[in-house]
Picture: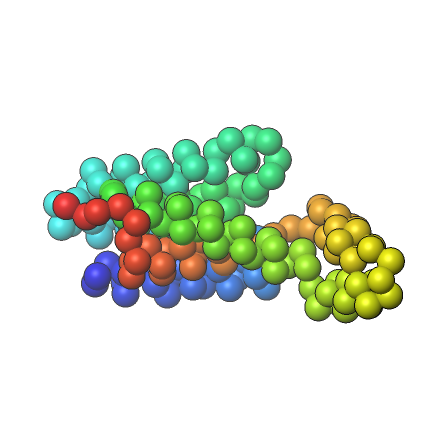
Length: 166
């Protein structure tokens, strides 16, 4: 648990930076990656940390190649994977995916979209879902601050593990 508190500031900084600027700086990604690898190696857990980085990298490699994810997000998940180490990195990736799904839904359906849907529902013409779909589809190419979801995944995996820890 002490590892969590050491790397939590960097995880939060990455998520908030991505929320504000829609990118994660390389200095943060590589700084977090190397400090996590060194931290775990100094405690005899260098291989689990490297495995966690590989899990984080592998989880977003295909979405990155398909153009659905930025390189900064891929590097940030690899760095957080190194901080979480094996097997916590798997939990962190799963929680990040769940948090990312919730984040996309929240960003896609803003309050103004709901207002239009409620008005359409009240009008009784059956176009409420069409209103929501049209509003969400119009923002399809917006950048999503996915590092924020990764930060939540890092936090949740530390307190609510999915896989049993040995």
